[in-house]
Length: 254
Ligand code: NAP
Image 1 (cartoon, rainbow, N blue to C red):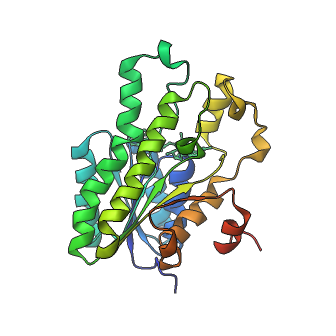
Image 2 (cartoon, rainbow, N blue to C red; image 1 turned 90 degrees about the vertical axis):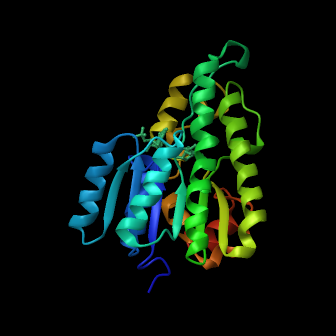
């Protein structure tokens, strides 16, 4: 029996890419999933697919930059499945891309509200519920950008750096109370985000051949592993999927 069987998990940004693959992977492992994203039609379709395969899934429209939306997702998970065992803070955006001094302050701030404040919203809403049931696991989807400088990515790099700091600080405050909080830096992944990056033509990431990107299904397996007790020693850190030893440890390669 897999450790996630019978557990409940919230996945933000579940309408496509890494989040959609993660919802399918968690359901395959026997978890009940709550899919959250702004595009309700997309998450409803994935939830229906999970039900048709014998799993349990709920779709809740949510903009992670709005705290009330995130709170609603947590409440719906509790109502449907009695508890919140896992939260995957995955929702994220790459734009605006471009020189900082030419950026639109509105767009720049709106992206921070998703990539950085959205992670805070997830932690703030889920941790009290997890504490009331004795613990839980949270995976924050990070990026190598959290610890890098990349041309045109002032927004993305600094908001991911803020999210990494949240991983560290939340772990520091709650690890002794049974909450396992870890970040995952997945490398480059074949999703819509990489299509946007390629189209921008800015910085070396946009020059990568799409064949080097990992499939989102591999990242989903890593997220599932990080949600289990096997990953306890990595709490408070960003784990990198670029690390071959880590991929072996997760059972992704031999
Ligand atoms: P993606 O295919 O563009 O998917 C992004 C997801 O986030 C979508 O489901 C989108 O759904 C959701 N989202 C965006 N804004 C949202 C908001 N305000 N509220 C709720 N959901 C929102 O990108 P992806 O590659 O799967 O990215 C997933 C995560 O991985 C992100 O945090 C990203 O930074 C990270 N990451 C990706 C790569 C990569 O190479 N792809 C590398 C490192 C890290 P809606 O538009 O329907 O809301």
